[in-house]
Image (tube, rainbow, N blue to C red; front, side, top):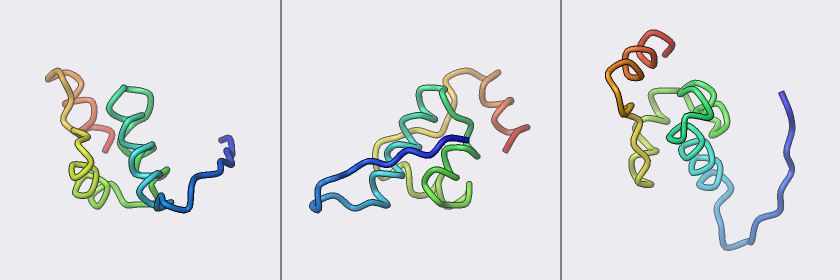
Length: 73
């Protein structure tokens, strides 16, 4: 695991940035649902509930991907 330190403007909320980062990396297939939730500092259930508010879909594009996500949730 790597650590990344970034500076963000005071106008941004740190939690929101982490949710968006995790959500977009999950959406692009770079992270599993669990990894994305961990980046956001949330449980998988809470991450699923929250990330949709930012326009990120947690539903896989194919049935095979969805089945894989369910088995690894």
